[in-house]
Length: 103
Image (cartoon, rainbow, N blue to C red; front, side, top):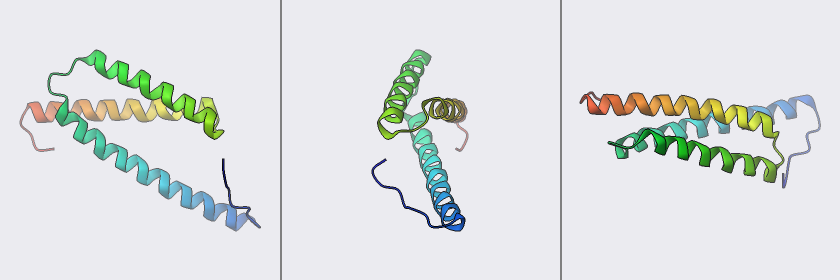
């Protein structure tokens, strides 16, 4: 980690954690919007493509975890949950598109 605020008390620690939580949730929401867009580009895509992409994402996240000093096990667990959720969300999105339903 290049820089981290040196908190002077517990309230400052909590303020920084709250700031990070907001940023994390915002990034999850943004990722979800891109997943929705991806569904529109994957008409007829083979399921194994998703598996290859998941492997690619997990390898990249593992590498980033090491580079940034994050807990590798926690990062992998969080990303498996995120990816699993968005794979299912994308699958549902593609089904709706195939059925001509609004998204």
